[in-house]
Length: 482
Ligand SMILES: Nc1ncnc2c1ncn2[C@@H]1O[C@H](COP(=O)(O)OP(=O)(O)OP(=O)(O)O)[C@@H](O)[C@H]1O
Image 1 (cartoon, rainbow, N blue to C red):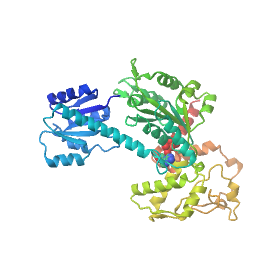
Image 2: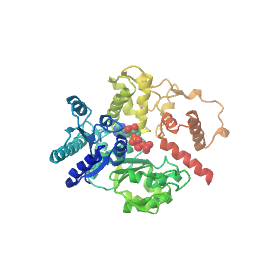
Image 3: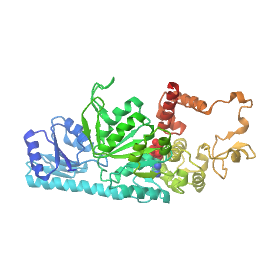
Image 4: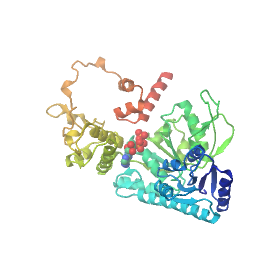
């Protein structure tokens, strides 16, 4: 795909002249005559380079320059008719890659643009190089265990191809981070990465979320809207919790994957895009196929490069590496300082089973940092961690004190919230027993209520992902319908 260049210049004759200088180089250009048009084009056109006039009718071009700070920001060449040394220094300090004074001669203009594009490529290469497995980290995925290294290896091998990556793994194992790594390792890295969580979007809106809609296509469609497929053109479309997608919509998705073409809701017109698909599920996709909830042909179409993320408790010392990185990151976010953690804390982290995987570890670390001021993490600061199903209750309950302690195999007490079995209600009889799903439903509903219907917040406190709650709510609704 040719590089995209945005020319921001309010004098039409100059803008057209710059455009004509660039035509022989084969780049794709767009003109913005005002600051407002430039800001809209940044979002929509996603240029690799901007030629930016400083004096715009509605704003100063340097304000646009200073708002560009993302990793994938375009290179900027600033143009001015009244160059002062101070302004040049200011523009370079704000991140401009070069500065040209008007009137600009064609060859000089082309060389500067060409250098800017080379710099952009170099920046991307450095970024990819730096992010490729280094110090136990591959892009944003932390962990140097053999299990994770083989995941990195698969992503690397598949990076140049457009083949679909199918990620499976328990909730909280990092499927979304993995999908981002697939995108960042690929030649599409500086194009959009669009993530869509199929479980979090109501059934009747998902088609329009993926394909977009025309104004008036359904009640509430008050304007035309581009869907995720259109936004991801040239880049990567990540379909998270894919197995939750309605079976009827799966056939439209299959067609889209096969042909790259789709129709917006309410439109007959075919739209063609170039998208790489990455999808993820925490279900067993073959079981979903077997039970008729997931189309077999779609499964085989998508299941080209499978990546399985291991549960955190199968990644050896990764838990320490991730905990250390998260302590550093979250302490900064919370304005706390962090010096390190004791060996006893590391041991606890290594022995605990982490049923909620990295998400649970992240929540635990935030809890510690919010509730304690100390910068060195000791065992008494770790909150109570829930038992997972594979923990033998007997082991814990058979302690002399009849206390359920923790899941740590050395039975180290870790919390002020240790539950005493002796404290359970004495008169609990068979008639009090309710179906487990009902108890869970009531508890989740109460939790959502307590969080003023804020599902993501309730999910964080319940230590599950929001999609888990959306999925459960959906299944209860379906039970009511049938
Ligand atoms: N290897 C890792 N290194 C650092 N952080 C991680 C790693 N894996 C996951 N995380 C962090 O853990 C959290 C959960 O990760 P993510 O959302 O990618 O999991 P998931 O498998 O997609 O979960 P779900 O299936 O519930 O949607 C995120 O905040 C993510 O940044």
